[in-house]
Amino acid sequence: MSRAERKMDHIQFALSTGQSKKNMFDDIRFVHQALPDSAVSDICIKPKTGDLNLESPVFINAMTGGGGQDTQKLNGLLARVARETGMAMAVGSQMAALKNATERQSYAVVRKENPDGIFFSNLGSEATVQQAKDAVEMIGANALQIHLNVVQELTMPEGDRDFRGALERIQAIVEGVNVPVIVKETGFGISRETAEKLSCCDVSAIDVSGFGGTNFASIENKRRQKKLSYFEDWGIPTAPAIVEVKSVFDKTVLASGGIQDARDMIKAFLLGADAVGLAGSFLKIAMQEGEKQLITEIHSLYEDLAMMMTALGAKNLMELQKCPAIITGELAQYLTARGFNPASYACDAKN
Image (cartoon, rainbow, N blue to C red; front, side, top):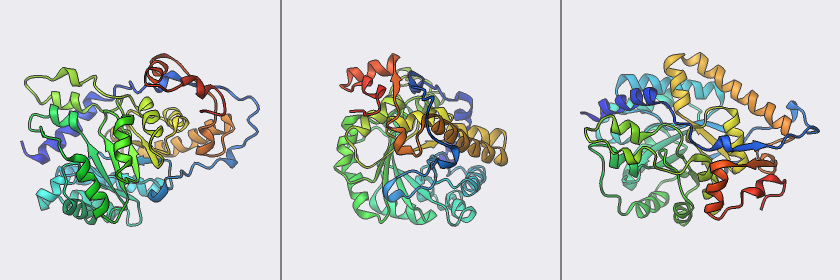
Protein backbone atom coordinates (compact mmCIF):
# COMPACT_ATOMS: atom_id res chain seq x y z
CA MET A 1 0.00 0.00 0.00
CA SER A 2 1.34 3.43 -0.92
CA ARG A 3 1.71 6.22 1.63
CA ALA A 4 -1.04 8.20 -0.14
CA GLU A 5 -3.44 5.26 0.07
CA ARG A 6 -2.63 4.85 3.74
CA LYS A 7 -3.41 8.54 4.37
CA MET A 8 -6.88 8.13 2.86
CA ASP A 9 -7.39 4.93 4.86
CA HIS A 10 -6.65 6.91 8.02
CA ILE A 11 -9.32 9.47 7.17
CA GLN A 12 -11.96 6.86 6.44
CA PHE A 13 -11.14 4.80 9.54
CA ALA A 14 -11.12 7.97 11.68
CA LEU A 15 -14.65 8.74 10.52
CA SER A 16 -15.86 5.19 11.06
CA THR A 17 -14.23 4.56 14.45
CA GLY A 18 -15.09 7.99 15.87
CA GLN A 19 -13.79 9.13 19.25
CA SER A 20 -13.91 7.22 22.52
CA LYS A 21 -14.70 10.34 24.61
CA LYS A 22 -12.81 8.73 27.52
CA ASN A 23 -10.83 11.88 28.21
CA MET A 24 -12.13 12.26 31.82
CA PHE A 25 -13.58 15.76 31.33
CA ASP A 26 -16.93 14.41 32.55
CA ASP A 27 -15.39 14.11 36.04
CA ILE A 28 -15.14 17.93 36.32
CA ARG A 29 -18.04 20.09 37.50
CA PHE A 30 -17.79 23.85 37.95
CA VAL A 31 -19.13 25.47 41.13
CA HIS A 32 -21.97 27.76 40.01
CA GLN A 33 -21.58 31.49 40.70
CA ALA A 34 -24.99 33.15 41.11
CA LEU A 35 -23.39 36.63 41.35
CA PRO A 36 -20.71 36.54 38.66
CA ASP A 37 -20.63 40.36 38.19
CA SER A 38 -19.87 39.91 34.50
CA ALA A 39 -21.23 40.59 31.00
CA VAL A 40 -20.79 38.79 27.71
CA SER A 41 -19.43 42.02 26.21
CA ASP A 42 -16.55 41.96 28.70
CA ILE A 43 -15.31 38.50 27.74
CA CYS A 44 -11.97 38.14 25.95
CA ILE A 45 -11.20 34.70 24.56
CA LYS A 46 -7.85 35.57 22.99
CA PRO A 47 -5.28 33.19 24.49
CA LYS A 48 -1.79 33.86 25.78
CA THR A 49 0.40 31.46 23.81
CA GLY A 50 3.86 32.98 23.88
CA ASP A 51 5.63 33.09 20.54
CA LEU A 52 2.85 31.10 18.84
CA ASN A 53 0.81 34.33 18.83
CA LEU A 54 -2.58 32.64 18.43
CA GLU A 55 -5.64 34.85 18.01
CA SER A 56 -8.17 32.10 18.72
CA PRO A 57 -8.18 29.74 21.72
CA VAL A 58 -9.06 26.93 19.32
CA PHE A 59 -7.00 25.62 16.41
CA ILE A 60 -7.46 22.98 13.74
CA ASN A 61 -5.10 20.21 14.72
CA ALA A 62 -3.07 18.00 12.41
CA MET A 63 -5.17 15.71 10.25
CA THR A 64 -4.14 15.14 6.71
CA GLY A 65 -2.04 15.72 3.62
CA GLY A 66 -0.05 13.49 1.31
CA GLY A 67 -3.08 11.64 -0.02
CA GLY A 68 -3.30 13.19 -3.47
CA GLN A 69 -6.20 15.28 -4.73
CA ASP A 70 -8.59 14.17 -1.99
CA THR A 71 -6.41 15.42 0.85
CA GLN A 72 -5.53 18.53 -1.13
CA LYS A 73 -9.21 19.43 -1.35
CA LEU A 74 -9.71 18.72 2.35
CA ASN A 75 -6.72 20.82 3.41
CA GLY A 76 -7.91 23.63 1.16
CA LEU A 77 -11.33 23.51 2.79
CA LEU A 78 -9.84 23.54 6.30
CA ALA A 79 -7.55 26.45 5.40
CA ARG A 80 -10.53 28.50 4.25
CA VAL A 81 -12.37 27.65 7.47
CA ALA A 82 -9.31 28.78 9.45
CA ARG A 83 -9.27 32.03 7.47
CA GLU A 84 -12.95 32.75 8.17
CA THR A 85 -12.74 31.91 11.90
CA GLY A 86 -9.34 33.36 12.83
CA MET A 87 -7.91 29.97 13.73
CA ALA A 88 -4.45 28.55 13.36
CA MET A 89 -4.18 25.25 11.50
CA ALA A 90 -1.75 22.34 11.59
CA VAL A 91 -1.26 20.12 8.56
CA GLY A 92 -0.69 16.39 8.80
CA SER A 93 2.76 14.82 8.62
CA GLN A 94 4.67 16.24 5.65
CA MET A 95 7.04 13.31 5.31
CA ALA A 96 4.92 12.12 2.39
CA ALA A 97 5.77 15.27 0.43
CA LEU A 98 9.43 15.18 1.43
CA LYS A 99 9.65 11.69 -0.04
CA ASN A 100 7.39 12.34 -3.02
CA ALA A 101 7.40 15.87 -4.45
CA THR A 102 4.08 15.31 -6.23
CA GLU A 103 2.38 15.47 -2.82
CA ARG A 104 3.68 18.95 -1.98
CA GLN A 105 0.59 20.69 -3.30
CA SER A 106 -1.66 18.76 -0.90
CA TYR A 107 0.06 20.78 1.85
CA ALA A 108 1.05 24.01 0.08
CA VAL A 109 -2.61 24.61 -0.78
CA VAL A 110 -3.21 25.86 2.78
CA ARG A 111 -1.03 28.94 2.29
CA LYS A 112 -2.66 29.60 -1.08
CA GLU A 113 -6.13 29.55 0.48
CA ASN A 114 -5.14 31.53 3.56
CA PRO A 115 -2.11 33.73 2.77
CA ASP A 116 -2.06 35.52 6.13
CA GLY A 117 -2.99 32.57 8.34
CA ILE A 118 -1.02 30.90 11.11
CA PHE A 119 0.06 27.41 10.06
CA PHE A 120 1.94 24.63 11.82
CA SER A 121 4.14 22.27 9.84
CA ASN A 122 4.23 18.67 11.03
CA LEU A 123 6.83 15.91 11.08
CA GLY A 124 7.61 12.91 13.24
CA SER A 125 10.49 12.71 15.70
CA GLU A 126 12.49 10.70 13.15
CA ALA A 127 12.94 13.85 11.03
CA THR A 128 16.30 15.46 10.36
CA VAL A 129 17.01 19.17 10.75
CA GLN A 130 17.01 19.61 6.97
CA GLN A 131 13.67 17.85 6.64
CA ALA A 132 12.27 20.15 9.34
CA LYS A 133 13.51 23.21 7.47
CA ASP A 134 12.02 21.91 4.22
CA ALA A 135 8.66 21.23 5.88
CA VAL A 136 8.53 24.76 7.27
CA GLU A 137 9.43 26.24 3.88
CA MET A 138 6.82 24.13 2.09
CA ILE A 139 3.88 25.96 3.65
CA GLY A 140 5.56 29.10 4.98
CA ALA A 141 4.88 27.76 8.46
CA ASN A 142 4.72 29.93 11.59
CA ALA A 143 5.61 26.98 13.83
CA LEU A 144 6.57 23.32 13.56
CA GLN A 145 4.83 20.40 15.24
CA ILE A 146 6.97 17.37 16.04
CA HIS A 147 4.64 14.46 16.71
CA LEU A 148 5.37 11.51 18.98
CA ASN A 149 3.54 8.38 17.85
CA VAL A 150 5.25 5.33 19.33
CA VAL A 151 2.03 3.36 19.89
CA GLN A 152 0.67 4.16 16.42
CA GLU A 153 3.95 3.11 14.78
CA LEU A 154 4.10 -0.12 16.78
CA THR A 155 0.52 -0.97 15.80
CA MET A 156 1.02 0.04 12.16
CA PRO A 157 1.95 -3.07 10.14
CA GLU A 158 4.68 -1.17 8.26
CA GLY A 159 5.52 1.18 11.16
CA ASP A 160 8.79 2.02 12.88
CA ARG A 161 10.22 -0.25 15.56
CA ASP A 162 13.19 1.83 16.73
CA PHE A 163 12.63 5.06 18.69
CA ARG A 164 16.10 5.69 20.02
CA GLY A 165 17.56 9.19 19.86
CA ALA A 166 14.24 11.03 19.47
CA LEU A 167 14.97 13.58 22.21
CA GLU A 168 18.34 14.44 20.69
CA ARG A 169 16.76 14.90 17.26
CA ILE A 170 14.10 17.20 18.73
CA GLN A 171 16.81 19.28 20.38
CA ALA A 172 18.68 19.56 17.08
CA ILE A 173 15.52 20.67 15.28
CA VAL A 174 14.76 23.30 17.94
CA GLU A 175 18.24 24.71 17.43
CA GLY A 176 18.12 24.39 13.63
CA VAL A 177 14.81 25.97 12.61
CA ASN A 178 13.79 29.61 12.88
CA VAL A 179 10.21 29.03 14.07
CA PRO A 180 8.77 27.87 17.42
CA VAL A 181 8.65 24.09 17.91
CA ILE A 182 5.61 22.33 19.37
CA VAL A 183 5.91 18.74 20.52
CA LYS A 184 2.67 16.76 20.48
CA GLU A 185 1.47 13.24 21.01
CA THR A 186 -0.96 11.54 18.65
CA GLY A 187 -3.70 10.53 21.05
CA PHE A 188 -1.92 8.72 23.88
CA GLY A 189 -1.00 11.63 26.14
CA ILE A 190 2.16 13.16 27.53
CA SER A 191 3.26 12.42 31.08
CA ARG A 192 5.01 14.60 33.62
CA GLU A 193 8.20 12.60 33.03
CA THR A 194 8.11 13.23 29.28
CA ALA A 195 7.29 16.90 29.77
CA GLU A 196 10.31 17.26 32.08
CA LYS A 197 12.57 15.87 29.36
CA LEU A 198 11.06 18.20 26.75
CA SER A 199 11.42 21.23 29.00
CA CYS A 200 15.19 20.78 28.74
CA CYS A 201 14.98 21.03 24.91
CA ASP A 202 13.62 24.59 24.90
CA VAL A 203 10.52 23.67 22.91
CA SER A 204 7.95 26.49 22.78
CA ALA A 205 4.84 24.41 23.48
CA ILE A 206 3.61 20.94 24.33
CA ASP A 207 0.33 19.58 22.99
CA VAL A 208 -0.73 16.84 25.42
CA SER A 209 -2.89 15.10 22.77
CA GLY A 210 -4.41 12.72 25.27
CA PHE A 211 -6.38 9.52 25.11
CA GLY A 212 -10.07 10.01 24.37
CA GLY A 213 -10.08 11.24 20.80
CA THR A 214 -9.28 9.52 17.52
CA ASN A 215 -7.61 6.24 18.46
CA PHE A 216 -4.80 5.47 16.04
CA ALA A 217 -4.16 2.08 17.63
CA SER A 218 -7.74 1.13 16.78
CA ILE A 219 -7.32 2.54 13.26
CA GLU A 220 -4.08 0.67 12.63
CA ASN A 221 -5.51 -2.54 14.08
CA LYS A 222 -8.12 -2.46 11.33
CA ARG A 223 -5.21 -2.78 8.90
CA ARG A 224 -3.59 -5.71 10.71
CA GLN A 225 -4.22 -9.46 10.59
CA LYS A 226 -2.98 -9.97 14.15
CA LYS A 227 -4.66 -7.30 16.30
CA LEU A 228 -2.65 -5.59 19.04
CA SER A 229 -5.77 -5.04 21.13
CA TYR A 230 -3.77 -4.11 24.25
CA PHE A 231 -2.89 -0.76 22.64
CA GLU A 232 -6.51 0.26 22.07
CA ASP A 233 -7.03 1.25 25.71
CA TRP A 234 -3.48 2.57 26.18
CA GLY A 235 -2.57 6.09 27.17
CA ILE A 236 -3.14 9.07 29.45
CA PRO A 237 -6.59 10.67 29.09
CA THR A 238 -6.56 14.30 28.03
CA ALA A 239 -7.71 15.84 31.33
CA PRO A 240 -4.98 14.35 33.56
CA ALA A 241 -2.40 14.82 30.80
CA ILE A 242 -2.97 18.59 31.01
CA VAL A 243 -2.32 18.51 34.76
CA GLU A 244 0.77 16.34 34.32
CA VAL A 245 2.35 18.63 31.72
CA LYS A 246 1.31 21.89 33.41
CA SER A 247 3.00 20.80 36.65
CA VAL A 248 6.51 20.85 35.13
CA PHE A 249 6.31 22.86 31.89
CA ASP A 250 6.14 26.64 32.25
CA LYS A 251 5.59 27.56 28.61
CA THR A 252 2.52 27.13 26.38
CA VAL A 253 0.40 24.04 27.07
CA LEU A 254 -1.96 22.98 24.30
CA ALA A 255 -4.72 20.43 24.82
CA SER A 256 -6.22 18.01 22.33
CA GLY A 257 -7.69 14.54 22.40
CA GLY A 258 -11.43 14.06 22.17
CA ILE A 259 -12.34 17.70 22.80
CA GLN A 260 -15.83 17.95 21.33
CA ASP A 261 -17.45 21.20 22.40
CA ALA A 262 -17.15 24.34 24.49
CA ARG A 263 -17.80 22.41 27.70
CA ASP A 264 -14.71 20.30 27.09
CA MET A 265 -12.77 23.41 26.10
CA ILE A 266 -13.61 25.35 29.24
CA LYS A 267 -12.60 22.40 31.42
CA ALA A 268 -9.29 22.14 29.56
CA PHE A 269 -8.66 25.83 30.28
CA LEU A 270 -9.55 25.29 33.96
CA LEU A 271 -6.86 22.61 34.21
CA GLY A 272 -4.23 24.88 32.68
CA ALA A 273 -4.39 24.58 28.89
CA ASP A 274 -3.62 27.80 27.03
CA ALA A 275 -5.39 26.77 23.80
CA VAL A 276 -7.13 23.66 22.49
CA GLY A 277 -6.91 21.74 19.24
CA LEU A 278 -9.75 19.88 17.55
CA ALA A 279 -9.33 17.44 14.70
CA GLY A 280 -11.74 14.49 14.62
CA SER A 281 -14.93 16.45 15.31
CA PHE A 282 -13.96 19.11 12.74
CA LEU A 283 -13.12 16.40 10.21
CA LYS A 284 -16.53 14.77 10.62
CA ILE A 285 -18.41 18.04 10.08
CA ALA A 286 -16.23 19.00 7.11
CA MET A 287 -16.67 15.64 5.39
CA GLN A 288 -20.35 15.11 6.15
CA GLU A 289 -21.86 18.61 6.33
CA GLY A 290 -19.44 20.85 4.46
CA GLU A 291 -17.42 24.02 4.81
CA LYS A 292 -20.19 26.48 5.66
CA GLN A 293 -21.56 24.30 8.45
CA LEU A 294 -18.10 23.88 9.97
CA ILE A 295 -17.66 27.68 10.02
CA THR A 296 -21.06 28.02 11.69
CA GLU A 297 -20.15 25.40 14.30
CA ILE A 298 -16.88 27.15 15.14
CA HIS A 299 -18.55 30.52 15.65
CA SER A 300 -21.03 28.71 17.88
CA LEU A 301 -18.10 27.35 19.91
CA TYR A 302 -16.87 30.90 20.48
CA GLU A 303 -20.33 32.04 21.56
CA ASP A 304 -20.82 29.09 23.93
CA LEU A 305 -17.41 29.66 25.49
CA ALA A 306 -18.19 33.34 26.12
CA MET A 307 -21.59 32.46 27.64
CA MET A 308 -20.08 29.96 30.09
CA MET A 309 -17.26 32.33 31.03
CA THR A 310 -19.85 35.00 31.77
CA ALA A 311 -21.74 32.60 34.06
CA LEU A 312 -18.49 31.85 35.92
CA GLY A 313 -17.41 35.48 36.18
CA ALA A 314 -14.18 34.83 34.26
CA LYS A 315 -13.33 37.69 31.91
CA ASN A 316 -10.46 35.88 30.21
CA LEU A 317 -8.92 32.42 29.92
CA MET A 318 -6.41 33.01 32.71
CA GLU A 319 -9.23 33.80 35.13
CA LEU A 320 -10.86 30.49 34.24
CA GLN A 321 -7.98 28.72 35.98
CA LYS A 322 -9.10 30.36 39.24
CA CYS A 323 -12.74 29.26 38.98
CA PRO A 324 -13.62 26.62 41.59
CA ALA A 325 -14.59 23.18 40.33
CA ILE A 326 -15.18 19.76 41.83
CA ILE A 327 -13.15 16.83 40.48
CA THR A 328 -14.53 13.36 41.16
CA GLY A 329 -14.46 9.82 39.79
CA GLU A 330 -11.59 8.36 37.82
CA LEU A 331 -9.95 11.75 37.29
CA ALA A 332 -9.75 12.38 41.04
CA GLN A 333 -8.36 8.89 41.59
CA TYR A 334 -5.80 9.32 38.84
CA LEU A 335 -4.59 12.70 40.09
CA THR A 336 -4.34 11.48 43.66
CA ALA A 337 -2.35 8.41 42.63
CA ARG A 338 0.07 10.64 40.71
CA GLY A 339 0.62 12.97 43.67
CA PHE A 340 -1.69 15.83 42.68
CA ASN A 341 -4.43 17.23 44.90
CA PRO A 342 -7.83 17.24 43.15
CA ALA A 343 -9.41 19.03 46.13
CA SER A 344 -7.26 22.10 45.39
CA TYR A 345 -9.46 22.84 42.36
CA ALA A 346 -12.50 23.29 44.62
CA CYS A 347 -11.34 26.71 45.83
CA ASP A 348 -10.38 29.87 43.96
CA ALA A 349 -6.72 29.79 45.03
CA LYS A 350 -5.41 26.50 43.72
CA ASN A 351 -2.12 25.18 44.93
